Length: 435
Image (cartoon, rainbow, N blue to C red; front, side, top):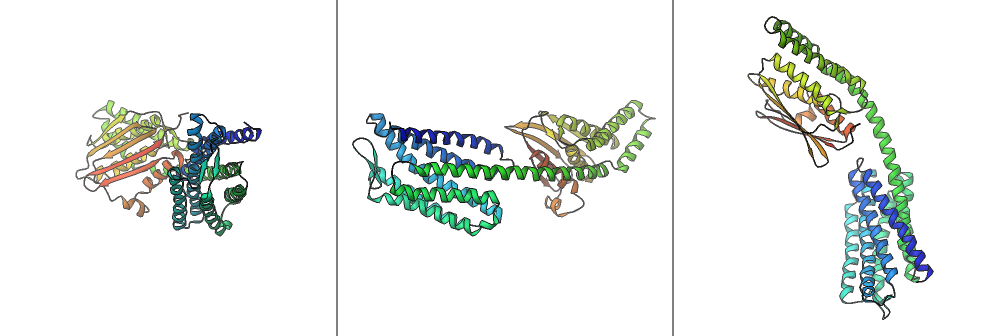
């Protein structure tokens, strides 16, 4: 094996290693934009596949053994096939970046590029049965045939169309994105033209990896900027939300009514009144602790406040309000007072709207795969879910809790409600280590 082949295989091997490291790192950035991370991972993976196939093609070139015979053919087909998949995933990723950054629809252009790539793949498959693009000599070496230009033409067309789209919106992109995406198109394009007339070294494969490095760096810079913006937004929003919670959750009439119930209960059941007073104190302590928390808190601490609140409410309404707890998962974090807000909403706007005001609140936690699930169900009056997003005053607590879950836990909140039957709120919180 000559030195040039060894050098090229080594360079491409380092490219494969970089690709797999980049895939792992890109996977860690998915919390900001899952779709973009997924598209980038596919893009990088196909570049890794292209490099692996080219390494095999170079390694078995001229090997006249039976294994060499099959490996050369499989590897060379894999190089071209992976190249088209690389183009398709590149079109998908770059188009997504352009569409999200500039808010335009270029789906028609994408379809054209997909069709061109598919034409190249079909031509490649036909060559397996009727060689007209490339073949292999008696020494098991690849050589081009008369119609080999079809492969180059389809690849160049995809790159040129994508380059035209990029240049059309070039000014709207961020600085590093401009250079990264431009390099992803121009470097392979120039090397492809060069390689058409200079067979031997896979310049195109090497330049695509260089382009992937630039794109990956641009993605990581964008991720870092997004994280900083998200942290600033989160910090400001959480502080404002703490103040709002303090004023809206510790309601004077709730404290007054609770103390009144305890006062009159002292004559009839001293022990019960003392127990309720202890729970009221626990509720108030949990409420005030909101101001001391800059991050989320363990679910078990949040549930202590919830249980104190429910115990007080059950006492106030002569046991007409019941609650059931089914806690199977205790190892995750939630924003302070978030579950409490939803439980209180279930009682105030659900059960207490019944005639007579009675019902049951069920709270459960469980682990599903890598997600922590919290469900709060009540058999209250129910409501039109659309009102949550249209009514500026009545459901602000639920709207803000939903946003807190999204900002502080990267989670989701789903609401199902049917008038006359009740409401179910489901929180899905991705797994994260509890400090």
